[in-house]
Image (cartoon, rainbow, N blue to C red):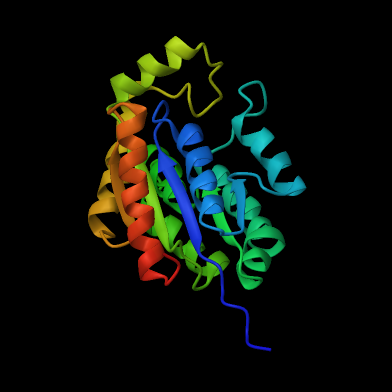
Length: 216
């Protein structure tokens, strides 16, 4: 028997109110319609240990963590996620769709947390080795648009969603900086457009990538 072809790693990124959850469901459905086995997961989280760390990070009523502590916790959850879920799925040929990954760490802990990209990069190399997403869809909206959408939906903000507006701007700027530095991997999608238009842009990106990967 031939060796199983490795799966592909797709990540979704974006600021609050960008519609990541809606588009994540759309992407999963699109892949399954094309006969592709897909595992949909999230960060921080994806494993029992990761979900426990997520609770510590996001719950506003818990102890405050320093930016360095946040960074280490995020990567602790990620290390478990990679070992327990992501790598085994990719090895058996499954496509992994992850809501947030290390780009979010650069944006939140690196930029908004003031640690800088170098601190994130050093731990990224240690924890992830060569593992990087095959493609990242970055759903972009101006901060004011995201805030208004969040208010309209009546979403109870977690600790990161409740951060100061200036820090939200830093997060968005960091995402766009990463996109400019990784143009082949990160595809920026204007999430201010109607959902149908966003879906169409997502289809275009996925169609292109599936063709590139020999799965069209």
